Length: 99
Image (cartoon, helix red, strand yellow):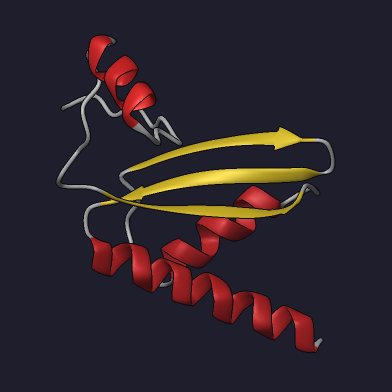
């Protein structure tokens, strides 16, 4: 199985050249989504459970915590899967906000 490394952001000619020099190249067959939120117990589970409940498979995931927040970089097989995941997460957040 091919290896996936999630590196972001790579913006601008200098960063792109440095990434290329390091042997990195953009993947043309992968779509990404960045999710941020309050870091609390179960936050990662809520993200992945929402995606799984929508019937979407993840291709890769990288997450980190900074202060009281988290960021999760999600990789999917297609732009369509990434959009469906974003829609599912937005819907889930809207339902929680109404409670």
